[in-house]
Length: 128
Image 1 (cartoon, rainbow, N blue to C red):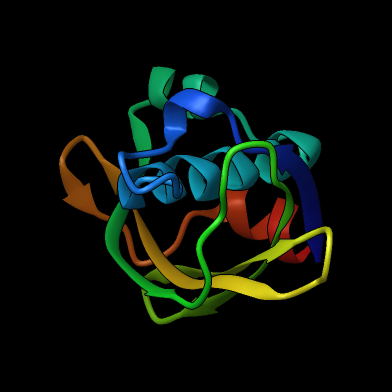
Image 2: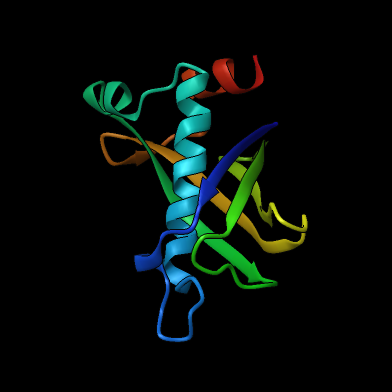
């Protein structure tokens, strides 16, 4: 549904010379935000109206490490499951196409602190 190409920067790696596991969440989040912006969804605009899309759960499966200078593609699809907007994401290394990470990110919408069963704005722009 969406792909974003990125490159590992030196400071994202740990002493082992591989990307520190916390940085994968940044990659995933950046890809989701770019995807949503392309569909006209602004978290700032939603927040100004009292609606916040928040992460409820993240599950990541690390397959192969990325290293400094590696180019990679973060891809995603999204589906609705009950109150959750589920982003299924993958990171593939560009040089060989190998899968480095699989993730599932469950998001929900809250309005003024209350869980919403759905968010019309998101559903219209995501699933149209």
